[in-house]
Length: 165
Image (cartoon, rainbow, N blue to C red; front, side):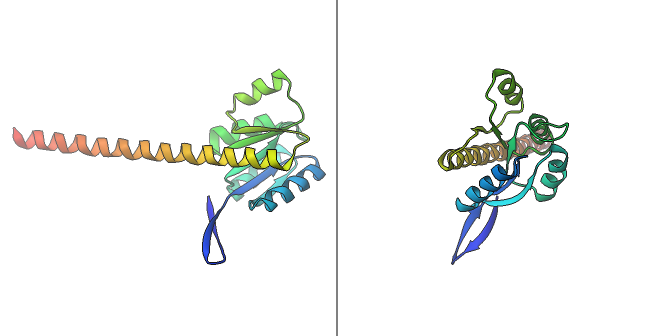
């Protein structure tokens, strides 16, 4: 999450990247997200182009169409984002068939937005995904801190035992 100054207070601004091969849909999404206060950091229409731009822009969330131009579909991009960059994904799709959903579920998405979409649906799904990701990230950091404290305590006990002998 990045911050940006608005008036005299600092407001969080989440950075979102769109991967959508229909230009009108991409424009609608970008306008909608900006109207909700999000920073849209990029938009690509193929998986191949999206890889590089997502790495460059480091977004907080990617809205990803399942059916894209080119050889790489959105589910392949989603798997790569999940495995390599750990960036949350919300899929955009007009296809809700079981086979597509089963493939997509394997990439552990943070939500689905069915086309045609409505502003309230997009806003609710994006906010829920960002909140869930923030909570998971905080829990992971707490777990890592707890493990580090436990290891420090374990070393102190070992040192104490060595001195006591």
